[in-house]
Structures are given as C-alpha cells and as structure tokens.
Image (cartoon, rainbow, N blue to C red; front, side, top):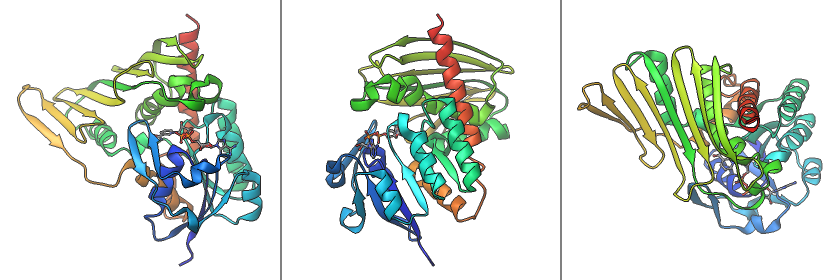
Length: 328
Ligand SMILES: NC(=O)c1ccc[n+]([C@@H]2O[C@H](COP(=O)([O-])OP(=O)(O)OC[C@H]3O[C@@H](n4cnc5c(N)ncnc54)[C@H](O)[C@@H]3O)[C@@H](O)[C@H]2O)c1
C-alpha cells in the first residue's frame, strides 16, 4: 500500500506533537518539514501549555526547509500539517490547497472570519480536504459528556460550566494581532465545543472581559442561553496557577465533571452520595484527530466531526464575544 506523504510546516510545540503522532502510523510517512527557525529541527523536546513531549521523529529521515514556497515546489505531498502562528494559518493553508494538497491546520482556524472563508473557498475550489485542529471535539472526556447530553443518560441538562485558564505564554502569542489573545487562542477551544454541541447561534450572549498584555482580550467570561440551558465559560491567561481545563454539566439526575489533570470524568448522582468514575483508555485527542483526518483523506469516511464550515462558526462566535466585551 502506498503511504500518504505528509509535510509539516511550523515545527514548534504543536508541530513536534503532530510529528510524534504521525510516526505511530504505518500508512503515513513524514517526508518534509519546514520552519523558519532551523534550531527547531534539532529540538529534542517540545512544550505546549500542559505537556512536555519528546521529539519522536528522527529528523534525519526527512527533508528540511526554511522556506515554505521552496518545500511546496520541491516536494510531492498528499497532506500538509500546519502548526504556524495563527495570523498566517489562512494564507499557508490556501497556498497548499491551491497546489492540490489536503490540509490539517491548527486551531484557531484564522485570526478573522474573512481568513476562514478564504480557506473554505480554496478547499471547495481544490476539491481537497481541510480540517482544523479543534482537538476538544476529539477529547474523549468531553465526547462522553456530549454523549450524555444527547442520549439523556442523566436526564435533562440544566447548565454547562467550562474553564480554560493559565499564565501567559511567551513569544508571538503576546502579540494580540498574531494570536488573538487568550480569547481567540485559548477560550476558542471551549467556544468551539459549545458550537459543536449546541450550535452556532445561542439565543442570548452576555460577556465581560479584560484587555491584557497582548492588547487583546486575555481574560473573559461569557454567559449564553441555548433554549433553557445555561452555558458559562471562563478563559484567561492572567492567572499564575497552572494550566487548567474544566467542564461541569449539571443534569436532572447527576453532575458530570472533568478536569484535565484528573484523567477521568467524575459523576455525582442527585442523592449527593452515589459516585461514578468514567475512565477512557484511548489514544489522546491529538492522535485521534489526525487519524480521523487521514482517514477522511483516504476516503474512509466524510469529515462530519470537524468540517471547516462548522469551525468558521466558532470564530464568528468568539469574535462576537470579543465585540461585546470591547463595546463596554
Ligand atoms: N490544539 C492545541 O491544543 C494547541 C496547543 C498549543 C498551540 N496550538 C496552536 O498551534 C499553533 C502553533 O502553536 P505552537 O504552540 O506550536 O507555536 P510555536 O511558536 O511553538 O510554533 C510555531 C512554529 O512556526 C514557525 N514559523 C513561524 N513562521 C513561519 C513561517 N512563515 N514558515 C515556517 N515556519 C514558521 C516558528 O519558528 C515556530 O517554530 C497556534 O495557532 C496555536 O494556537 C494548539
């Protein structure tokens, strides 16, 4: 069987994580990597907000480039994995799609709705696949809670409370026009899950927040109503405590909670005493989302979980929240 040839652009934190996932697949070969900073090629560890990982890919087995255009010209690849700073997600995805390459591009989809639309237009024109790495859609504990909302396991849903907080990252993330600040970079994960679970159009939205070091909204709280379900999300980079992601769903018959460092969903039943623990033993969400995308490219299924026509709506929702916050 012919292996899918994969190129990676942006070999920083997430580029290393995705390369590590890809070396685990038999039907894929990473053939080339591009980064403007050649030191990244020899970096042996990668760090993202909650995880330090070993560099699993042997860099000597791939061609390396410092210019993306040169890599596109010289290499024949089936799939591009893009883990670039957010302000250039759209332009690089469009360049690859225009060359007939399938693109997996990191979240957030783009810094603007116009950028997202350009990506969708290029995808439609090329007939290739495009998926954004909104990994929380593939996070098994969030999936479990979503399934309980849909199958009524714990009865009617009353409210969902979400949180994603930590301290400021460094580098380009501190430039609001490149990262979008905490609202677009971090909080968008939860906004995207809410869009995925409840839809892109809440009946109402109230939001408040603070503009921080990035010149963008770095601390935010949003309250939304979907019918009679209340959704509340907090996102922040202004904290000094360790990174924390959290979700709590209050149902008629139970409360289901998950926190990133627990590694399990904890359920407390309505008597306040009966507890249930749901441990999910599956490959992590980064591995799962990439596998899902590669199988989409191979024609094994349609991209129903994370199509770009849905992730653009998460950017629209996040930017609406930003507009409300900034108008006050
Ligand atoms: N899904 C998640 O959980 C998650 C977590 C962290 C970051 N991200 C997203 O992934 C993207 C990358 O974040 P990161 O933490 O890996 O950042 P990073 O700074 O560690 O990596 C970005 C890399 O891109 C390179 N680069 C910049 N401009 C380039 C260009 N023109 N051509 C080639 N290479 C270029 C940089 O040198 C750097 O190595 C961001 O959009 C971020 O929001 C997603």
